[in-house]
Image (tube, rainbow, N blue to C red):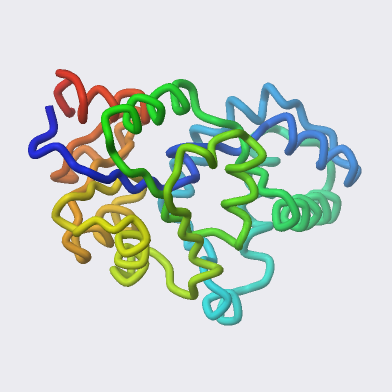
Length: 241
């Protein structure tokens, strides 16, 4: 068991709580004139996850002004390519831009991970306060509401809205202040070491890495494959990797 047991758990959103939804991506792509199979998109998620671990996602308005406006579309274009979408370069570029625009309207990372909701229920039942810290585009709270997860969280911190992003320790302090919990009593859970783990440590918060693909075997924090395993780590007897 993770000791001492935290009184608060801070979660990353993408690839921790929720994931790119293949059905939604396929539907928007078709609307943009590109045919792609939702099952193929689902199979492409793991490779996209490997690549996204190195992807410099825009996280605040200030960062967006210093990075290409196509940066978000680039990720969705890569998803289409990995899934074998049909279409020439111009058509794929257009579809990726449409996907990015739709994502900004309604967050496409809206497939809830297996076992996530049950794990959140367990953690709250154990008396833990729960929060989300996401490098996003101002859409996280609405997305969590739409998929039914918002009710489990005491605080949602979206980098776009607060103007500071992980790994800056300031965003962790914002979440801790909203939860009313000191850093030493919290744990951060996320999938990118350079963002989630390093940022948490800089803020004095312990960390657990979600690493189902064993991408980061040398990172010296407990590692779990998913949020369900995290609940076992914090509340049960499952050992970390």
